[in-house]
Length: 269
Image (cartoon, rainbow, N blue to C red; front, side, top):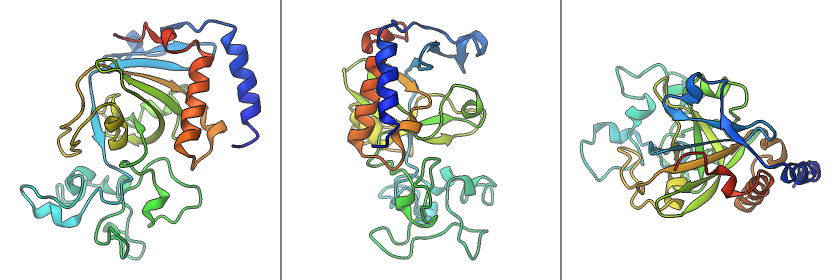
């Protein structure tokens, strides 16, 4: 990892000497975002919340969307999600599809279709977290929902609020019903003004016990309350791309720095 790790370790050591105190985040009305209670530790800047809400985001997967699925009314489908959910084919192509799908460089009024590779014929869906300097039409530039546990910062306003974090920051989520957990990276933003906390990648919900996950309708997510802790600013240590081990190691050290999982008991049950 980068040389920034050493200063972060020192900071964590200092934090561990002071018990983290997750208190209602008063910067938000009623310390909530759309009825999801938020608690924050002022010393570390980490925040946590618990929610039963879940939504699967297939974005970043090279097989997320296929144009032929617009005409399919039932399974089997080619893509993980319907292009209409990316704004393409909806109301004569919604204006927001370029926020999800990569535009054709030579014909920017339509989405780019992969020319070669195992997913030739599929659109390229983008994520907010991407490889710096990556080729826009290369799916490897983006954060693959199939393989990378990531969470989504909801809507357009939440990511702009001070202290909520940004793509590349890390965290950990637990399914309190079955005890499964996974470290994650913030991989995407969006979902519209009505979006809530609780959206994540296919890989994230699979790690939490999901089976036969369906991004089209949200089926397959394991039931239970999901408790998240997010460490804003950790992206400065991690860098991207990063290995799953690097994400897990950093998230684990940061969790230890705020007192471990036991410090999160007030963050929902």
